[in-house]
Length: 366
Image (tube, rainbow, N blue to C red; front, side, top):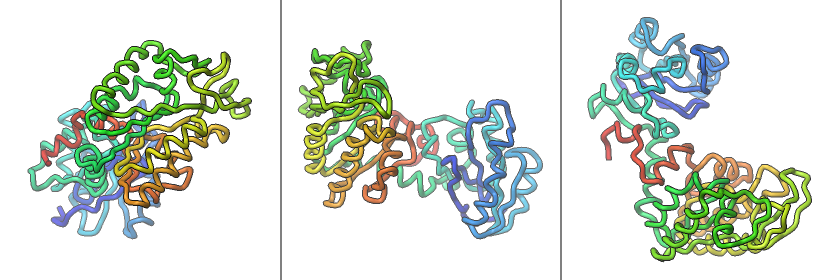
């Protein structure tokens, strides 16, 4: 086996384990074992181009062929192993499967923040088969954890958290944890209308979680008790149907007409939210302000992205996390104008909820 450190790189799946110079990964969600569509063999030509070296391929991620090819590697050579998810044991966190993977190398590098919240064989269980000085985080994992901890544990004040998306139920734990840390919490997207309903507002046919109305009330009360300012959008861009070509009007969020639904924050809310962001030193953004995939309802999300970029340019630290927020910041061209864009949707969410991530805990590192 080569004694030099591994050469970590990222595949399209964003889930990478590097064992010596034998990287293994997930790709897609194959349901019935080996499937050509999800074979990592399709990545070989691109990896050769990226790395500038010959990339060998093993048709399996465990077994004799994988062992022989890994053992024959010379310094500087790379062997890509087949998709781990062809084995159900991977997602089940099977210990024997993890042990078989561990036998392929001397050093374990986990660069898979996107699955750090899952106790999969290759992202958590495998770590127990390597000594403390033979298992390390990759550069991506290091950057993800450092960026998240900077916001969660060492945020410069004022700290503003921007929450969006469809459902309050998806963000309850996150909001509760942020109530212990943030100075301001901005709430937009479909989840905002449950808060307006909780305050007795008329929200037309806007999205609402009836079973979370009491939760919304409790969160508002807790925020007041802790001195955290919750900012709800004053107005919305409402539509007469959920359609890119719907008729629209600006409405007050406490009195949305029957048959109309809020699909984006309105101009007053944009101005108010932008001012809060401009005065912030630390900013966390998780979730869009509206249905930004439709041009008529993208102004709010785009304005938030612009405001975050402007605040960052003046010295604020900004972290963008969550699939939709990341998609938005990239769509509007501001990804290089914020401090950090996380690759881990669910993992980042659970980290900010205060949960222990198996992929990080397994490494036994601070």
